[in-house]
Length: 432
Image (cartoon, rainbow, N blue to C red; front, side):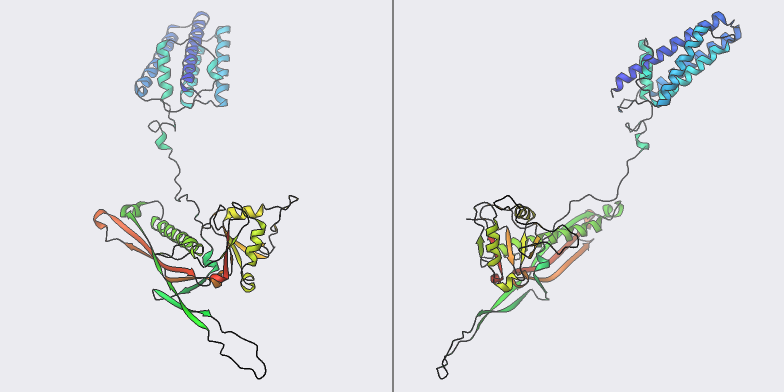
């Protein structure tokens, strides 16, 4: 809505009211036998109106228009129309026998005018009359702009503050499910070593009296798991902690926990093993199976992946992939355009599976692309170990940065992870 246009209409309306009032007064003077005392009262009423207009103009002339709002209430429309009808009736009939009718008309004009200034006018009401002088237009424009409005801070907006919600909108942090699949061990040392068998004895068939040769002894090695440290440090002013509308320290602690969980999940999938846990995809000993296509996942590739681990590992196997990869698998079709895989929709159905083995979505797994490994399948509990040394430690330090009025909130975690049985798990590679 154009505020200037509406204010111009207010000017025109006020001029119409004045014109009608003057016409009504002339009719009363002409036909109502106005006495000198009544004439004086009418003159004084007119002077009072002019004085009020001048006072309002002086008080409110300095405020700028900031709100684009001039809306009318339905009752105001009816009031103005009733007023116009009344004035026209009195003008046409001569105002009746008493001169007080002229005062009544002028009082009505004042009442309707002030209601319009304070409440706003609708376009229907503003189309009544035209013909304001420049001085009258300037007065009405300044007066209407001074109404108390929410859109102008100085004109009343400060009295209608916005509601403040004491919570923070934050995106959800997705965590890798690897911790729920792998074997977890806690320790009070910086590292652990686990014996592993590297060779087996051999068995041979012999005759009843044949020579029994030495079958050899099994061989062993040691698998070493080391813990690595994650660290986070946030500085916040003491006054911020004291004056904030919500629990800032609690929010920071929650944020640190989420980010630590996200970081370790990424390391369990693709960590380098240097200064951080070793990821499943980074271990060169984990064998891979080609998908059968240079850039896409195929049903044949998934079948080959399922049958690659030994039976004992496949029976405990879990497919791990990104959500986008799961979507691509869901869209695989046969030669007749029928979907190959249809998960159950019933709420009481057993967990959805791929080739009768469960799957989980891991946000850290790569998406489908040439030479990527978007799916891993196998016995995760047998294949991957997680070592927890310090689960989570958060320290609030009010001393180190006290010279600048800051409090340090630091967090640390010591955790390790690596593949200990690469034969129990396999990767699907997007390749022909």
